[in-house]
Length: 386
Image 1 (cartoon, rainbow, N blue to C red):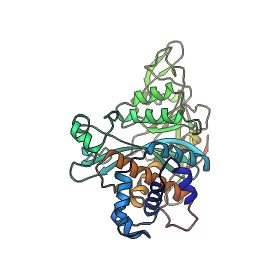
Image 2: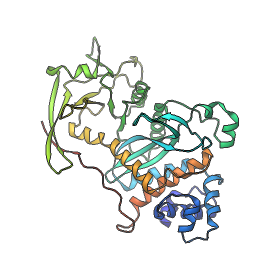
Image 3: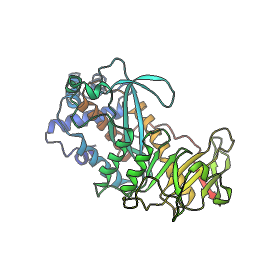
Image 4: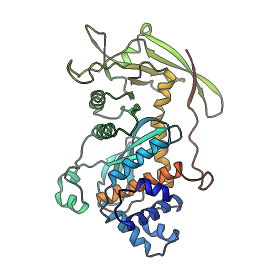
């Protein structure tokens, strides 16, 4: 752990910060149940008074979390084989209204109204695990307009509520600005975002490869000299203009079944980008995966990886599921829901330590030294035949 600490927390200038960081990291990994400073202090080889030090390290110590996260991302990339960047949303239920960023919102996955915080996480999916490397707290409502509330929570003036897609484009710009980080595709689910068009256009302007799940109503352009506007759903209804690939899928019961995948025979472009706009010349491939049983709507993806095999593209698309699996593990094992402070810096400090604990667990811990984590659900696409 000392080697890991020296690599990741080198930006810390004071030795006591590094000591409390190591204690906090150790407790996040080893303590069962809720990860609060009081419980963590009782379980670590520290006196009970250490609860105050752990609390101060997270809530009051003025360390910058950004360089720590960047070092963490670089270390993960160096010790693994990165496959894609992806983003996942996290809803953190809270009682009351004083925790920074908390307000009532509708949970898109359940349709229920919940009181809590909304966060966005950036993940690097690799050959071994899907690692969290950055976090954003989505603000809005009174957290944008109430200056006194913002002052108490120590929210920087630059932090204001903005569409979800703006966070994604911010992550992409930050990654692109770091030469040490991998230039791998961005895998996103755009089916629930109102600003999906802006996200696709922004990533195109940054010349980034994408594998994006989209609604069947997503508009695309076909043809070169006289472009025609169509939706991806309409495009894939043209049987003469698509190719069928058959992928092999392993079911939860260990059986193998065939899954048809339709690919548009040509390429498409994005509407809304002018001739002189950066990214306007980018071409995309459209894929459709009908539900084998016909009970659910078909799913659609557009990707810049026009020269990749269909099974490779859909294997990358699984990065989204891998990120959601990591989020579930962070909730169960690493205390991502347990921050009890009310400050904006405190929340980011805690989430940074959670990310570091997850990375240490999977990059450095000896096999068998820690309890095993839940296995990923089966059902991946394993092979293909055209």
